[in-house]
Image 1 (cartoon, rainbow, N blue to C red):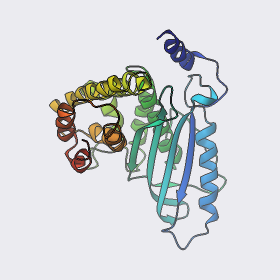
Image 2 (cartoon, rainbow, N blue to C red):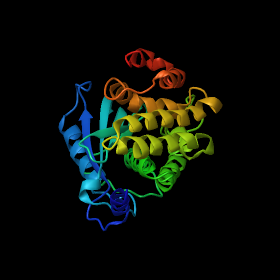
Image 3 (cartoon, one colour):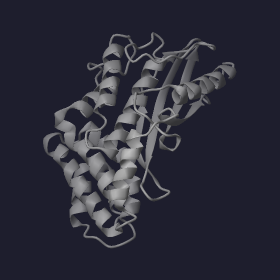
Length: 296
């Protein structure tokens, strides 16, 4: 236990030489047939450098602590300098004493329209959303990724990063671009994502991230059966959200990242009682019922 505590303190307190993210950026432009493809390749390189070389927080990271993530931009339209696109954001987190990385975030932003000219400087300002909407959206998700990762190591650890994302969302609401606003006919955009993360109503979601990862997965190598039981307990915590907000946005966000992992985890290894687990899973995420039926 002492060694593990030292490892955690080292993780959060050591002097670092690296930025926070190790991000793969990919631009898919197959649907655009009447443009010079060089602009997409240039944008991909520029965003890769921007995301991985920007210092997003004041927290210290070692090189091996950088958060693994990806941002895939699917471009459906291009009229220079305007891009019509969606953005798939994914991140994962290493499990202690293993080679396995656990998915934490898997989100598709359907309203990622922006402008970009070859040679534009991409500079992050935490107190500004650029008029092109590119840096602002990427900065928003960088902070969300870091916040979710922090929540998985320390209860409530992601608050300051969510607040940074919330500030960007507030600034973006006046930009004229979709995805930032409260009154857009959807409750599943950037505005609701970060406001829900900071709402006391959804504290059980954030507690679940900590319990599921730090109290369960990180102990899997020591006691596989007990760790699986802790996963079941963490999903009971998530069920507290269901009791006050059925079919909540954040509940969907959780299972978009975790459904396959949960099926895999409970489809082998030491046997545990599954009755309560299956009851909660079917209540929390009925749309994944076909997956839950694979758990035996």
